[in-house]
Amino acid sequence: MDDDILNMLKRLRAIADTGLLYAKDDYDIERYEEIRELNTRLMGKYTGHEKKNLVKMFPAVTDYPTAKVDVRGLVLSPDRGILLVRERADGKWSLPGGWADIGFTPSETIIKEFEEETGLDVRPVRLLGVMDKKMHPHPPQPFYVYKMVFYCETLSGTLQKGFDVLDVGYFSINALPELSEDRILKSQIEMLYRKVISEDKVPYFD
Image 1 (cartoon, rainbow, N blue to C red):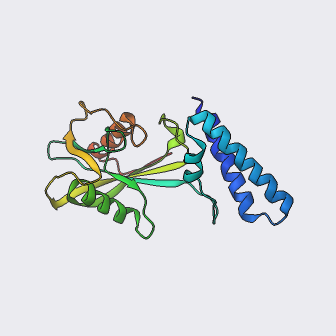
Image 2 (cartoon, helix red, strand yellow):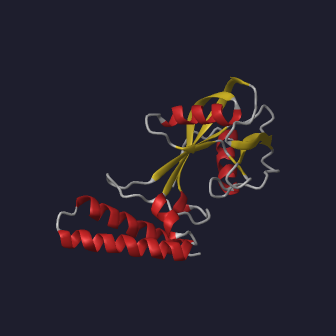
């Protein structure tokens, strides 16, 4: 699947949504609605998603459309094992985290996600990177996503899986399990891990 085509479809959707948000002329509104309808049909043919599901994913906008934000955290055990959670959505593994929550700062979001998914109370130490999924070989996804990853230290708590994950555990950087590549890639974990081990304080971006 050509990522450039998918990114153009996402951009076209954003243009149609923005046009509908600000258009006043009935003719312009009709044209933008037609563009959005054609975009939904093209997105369905290209990604395999049913039209009704795409309509649910992309409700009518009430504000300027922006990228979605995924917030995740990297925690290491004393022997440098990487803490991962097994996602219910696909049965594969990822760094703890999820969509940014309205009303929570990025650090508050990651603290909440760790408590819910792993039972641990953590402290975000520093931002490791901000990644645009377009710039990394993730599987195709309808949404346009930025990913923020923090290095976190464990303060307290007992490791236990939360209700929204299947399992939780530490893994060696050299023996990572099958990853949920919609959420995190092996190359990204390796890059972030090297930053922590080498004490590289400069965040990665893009």
